[in-house]
Amino acid sequence: MKLLKFVFRLLAWLGIVWPIVVVYSRVIKKTKSEYIGDNRPVILFLSYERLQKDIQILDDTEEFCVLRIPFIWQKSILNQFYPKGTTRAQIFNPENSVNVAKAQNKLHVFMRRFLTSLYRKLGVKCVVSPGLYYHQDLDWGKISDELGFPFILIPRENYGAESANHERYKRLLRHRISFSGSRIICQSEPFRDLFIKHGIVDPEKIVALGCLRMDAFIENVKSYQKTLGKRKNVLLFSFSHGTSLIGHPDQALYFDNPHWTRKSDIGWVKLFESVHSAFARLAIERPDVDFIIKPKWLGRWKEEIEKAVAKRGINLSKISNIFFTEEEAHTLILDSDVVCSFGSNTIVEAGFASKPVIIPMYYEAKRKDYREYLWYYKYYNLYDIAESEESFIALVNKRLLDPTVEDGLLEKRKSLFEYAFSSQKSDATEKYITEIKDIINV
Image (tube, rainbow, N blue to C red; front, side):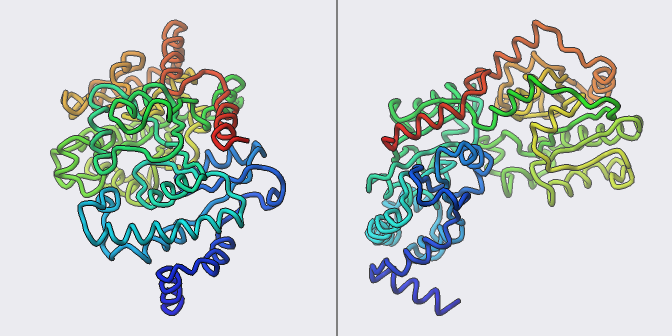
């Protein structure tokens, strides 16, 4: 491996690209190999791990040939040029470091030759990234666009663009506040307005076409019928100490990462312990009901939940009707009888699916400077609000008995869904196909 790295670096610095092109043309994954060689436009996805569901949706349309480059190979090119220890901020702003600026200039010279040859060999028409802040995509996208292979951004996130969210997003992108590609395809008009307001992109380079992942969800909401005889279940979309707080001064000062705080009085610490403990109490009190916890991932997230609940003397592993899952959120929502969520788009999605939605708004959630960072906070009046731990438990039990959502309220929830995701119709995929083909002139 050391010899291989040396040879790779030597070739890169000498500007000899053909051996590297041969290697990369083999490691770049073809999601459906039978499409290679026909007339479908070829799309190369960068950082594809963050956009896998959307990639699959576009791939399944059979309108495109979809390629994916593994992260390790994508970053290997950068590692041959940037000095060890180069930060994201330096890559976004190379003018602040002479060494990084020189390295980036040499990288770009190499990539112009390398990408021209690679794209010709693979038939690539455009390049797609899932986020502005993925620094490993910056050079690939910028040079691709310069060479005439449009760089398209399809942000996976869909931030609620109200109140403090504007400043939060601006801080999140403080190292890079402009888009150098051909088009951003975002999910909603508020998200589009946010990008334009902060000078991230010119108005003519960004469109709001909805969310690819919502098309199937919208159709499934219309046709869903719960299986007869299936046990009732309550679903909790777990939150962390730092959910939605990116950009808040406390998050920058007291968090090692976006989710877990170093201080017991900073973040949603008390609320986190209370809600998860209340959920465990409910499971103990209601053995006839299943209680499902959906963290963003297992591992540490699950461990933090277990530790918080253990402070109340509860061992989650001994409760037979409480489950952790990584199953897809929309399937969980449709199968649930009651949904509990906090600081998440799932509130809007579950409301659209006519589910009773319970939001805990006590302890730290009473802090004005915190709650302003919650997505869609000003629409929380459309859902059931728990103002204490006992209120949370009582609302879950109440909604298990009566899950009905009155028609007037449901219509407002559906309007919010349309505001958040551009449409109540399952037409995003069709719009994306048209837009991408227009960008690449197909």
